[in-house]
Length: 224
Image (cartoon, rainbow, N blue to C red; front, side):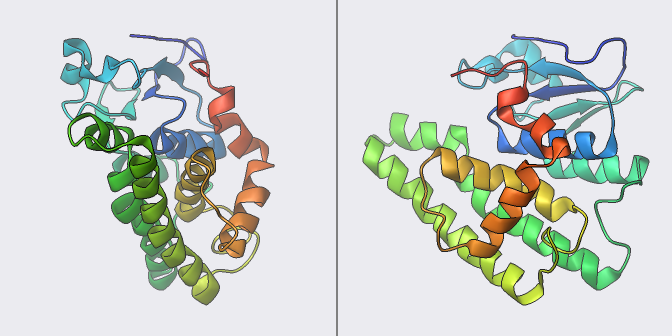
């Protein structure tokens, strides 16, 4: 397993892969909240997530995994994000107002439940390796589900979004989820011109140091 430490002498650990959008979500939240952590790289392309030692850490064979300063292991990015927002409440990533909180989670779930699960690395590998899809078919699959999800995201932002971020003048979990998804869509050469509101938020966020620190290019396991 490729393991690199980004911060030394601290107890919080994050198992991550530089290109994983779910890991990226957690890295953004940790950065926004100013939480230092040890970075432990897991190369998904090399299959390190399927090793016996890693399956003991995460039976779902994915990233991210957060190891708390008390040694508890938390899997699944949305569970980790909820934990971090509860334990480190400032700055908050979820509004206190019930409707505002629902709007944030609505957008998060379009990405985390509808878009990401059908387009992650293991799904793409399966439709090629087991179902025999050609590269162009795989790309068409990916772009179809990006378009389906982003159409919904853009509609929600047009109806309810405001400010420089998704919902106001400070980042929320919606931005934490949106930026990695847009980043991956651009990496797969998806046409994002139909989503001006989402792209304006993306451009605003990636220029901020909190988001820049979390980007794939700035991780110790960055690979070509």
